[in-house]
Amino acid sequence: MPLRQLILKIHSRCNLSCDYCYVYESIDQSWRGRPTTMAPATIEQIARRIDDHAHRHDLRDLQVVLHGGEPLLAGHDGVAAALSAIRGAFPATRFSMQTNGILLDERFLALFHEYGVRVGVSVDGGRAATDRHRRYANGRGSYDRIAAGIELLMRPEHAEIYGGLLCTIDIDNDPDEVLRGLLDFRPPRVDLLLPHGNWTNPPPHHDRPLAYGHWLIRVFDRWYDQRPEPTRVRMFESIIARLFGLPSQTEAFGGEQLGIVTVETDGAYEQSDALKTTAEGGPATGLSVTGHTFDDVLEHLAVAAPYRLSQQCRSCPVVNVCGGGLRAHRYAEETGFDNPSVYCQDLLALITHIGDRVRADLNNAAVLAQ
Image (tube, rainbow, N blue to C red; front, side, top):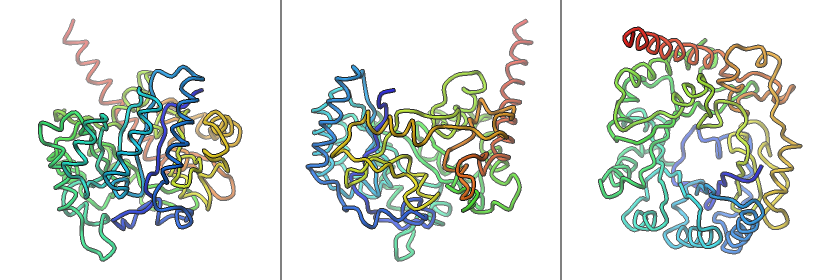
């Protein structure tokens, strides 16, 4: 299978110090030994690899995600150079970016319009929810600066590059207030991210049965009842899609998502960042853009990191929907990934609830149509 999404870590540091960060606060600390910024020579090598891969596989398009750390710390010129090199190598590239939004300004937005970059901003709801974790190193909250960046994106002239919001779930935050705080920004899409944890390093409040499931059910019911325009929620839509046998929009549901590769600032190929929470070197492949093609790393991952479900998952009635959950959430030191998700019961409750509600609506519609 060819490459379909490339995640580029163009800057490996951040201007925030979020206490739940899976890059800086987890067991894998490989960021400490990497360059702060991706060098121009590394970007040029990536561009050559893209060009070679596109010709070899006759690619129609490719999604490239600028990531970090905080990618905007690479500066206007650094971001522009990366976009220019990659677009020059493969004109059909579709760009997106995940940022905390603090450094967004009109110069960046003009650049994103030029290259068609869809911008996603990380925020956890309103002020209280966001400032609970998303703080500067001195402990000061970041909500005001993040909100100012999102408000720039909300202007009508920037609608085509406003990609949406990413919210990391904290079940101590009221779910209704979190949804309300997110909807205030009128995002085209919301991504809800379960805190990265596993059986060896459990997520917060793992001792509270179904706490995440109940939290998500409340958010789903409010969203499903309101159908707020223009906001879609990728987690919920992916579950509904899988219930009807359609593809998921996210690697967190539906099973293996092939063709995704991360490139760190030093040019190293890695797997998903979420694996940084499993073990030191968890996402490492041992390969890099200097000596290996994208085909090399994709073939390596097919052999070294095959997607297998545990026996418990294979016998589960909703396995075709959740696909076992996110790979990183299945990890245990003694058994590797041969386990259900650490969120298994929460996912079962959420999927069952969504299925019941959607099927009831379809049945009611069928009755009314008779």
